[in-house]
Amino acid sequence: MDDLGFILLSYLATFGGTAALVWQVLRRGRALARQLPDEDKPWI
Amino acid sequence: MVTTPAPTPPGAVAAAPAGTGTTFTRWLGALTLVAMAVLTLFGLVISPADQVQGDSVRILYVHVGTVWVAYLAFVVTAISSAAYLWRRTSSLTWDRIAGASAEIGVLFMAVTLLTGALWGRISWGTFWVWDARVTTTAFLFITYVGYLAVRGLGGSHQQRARRSAVVALLAVLEIPLVHFSVKLWRSVHQDASVAGRGDVTLDDTMLFTLLLGVVAFTMLYAWYVLHRQRVLAMEDAIDDKGLDLALAERRREATTTTPTGLVIGETH
Image (cartoon, rainbow over all chains, first blue to last red; front, side):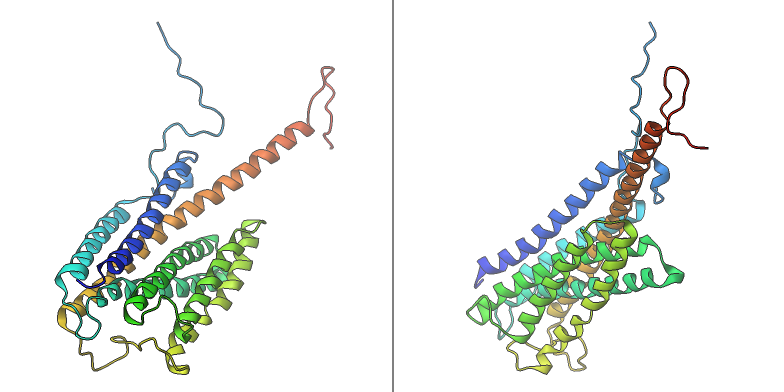
C-alpha cells in the first residue's frame, strides 16, 4: 500500500481524538454523578 | 457490638453509581463501536484503491464523515441557540445541546483539517495550500474555538447562554461560504463527489464505505451530545447548589445569636 504511514496516521488521529473525547466525557459524568442526588439526573 | 455507620458529609450523596448513560445510549454506543470497526475494515482493507488517487482515497472515508458531522454539529448549535433565544422555547437545555454539539464539531473539524493535510501531502505534495476551501475551513474551525471560549467566560448560566447563542447564530453563516467556496473561487479542492450529483460513478464498495463513514460518525455525534449535555446539566446543578450553600452560609452568619440571646443582624 502506498503512503501507508499517512493513511494510518489519519485513522489514528481520527479514532484517537474521538476516543479521548469519549473517555473524558464518561469520566466527568461519573465524577459529577457521585456529587448529585438522583433527582438532579432526570435521565435515570 | 453495634457499629454506627460513618455520617455522610453534608451535600454528599451516599450511593450514586450511575453516570450519564441510559439503556438507549449504551446500545447506541455499542452500535457505534461496531460501525467504526466495520468502517476501519472496509476503509483500510476491503475497499479497492482508486484509479486516480490510489490508496490515498482511504483517508477520504474518515475525512468526509468527520466534515459532515462538523457541519451538522454547527447547524444544530445554531438551531439550539435560536430555540434558546426564542421566548416560547427558552430553556437552558437548548444552550447545553448547543455547547455539546459545538464541542464535537470542533474536534471533528480539527480531524478534518488534519486528515485533509495528510491527504494533501500525498495528492498535492504539500500539507497545506492557501486554497479557498482549505482556508475557509480553517477559519470556520477558529471561529468555533472562539465560540467555546465565549462559553467559558464568567457570569450566570443565562448570561452564558444568551451571549453564546448570538455568537453561534453569526458563526453558522460561514458554513455556506465554506461549502460553496469551491464554486465561488478557483480552488484546487475537488467538488462534491456524491452529494447533490445525479451521476455518481463511484465503485459500489467505495460508495458503501463512504456512506458507512457518514452514518458511523453521525451515530457517534448523537451519542456524544446526549452524554455531554447531561454532564453540562450536572455542572450547572452543582454550580447552583454551591451558590445556594454560600447564600445559606451567609444568612447563617447574618443571624448569629449572642450568648445573651440577642439576635444580631436580623431585621423585622
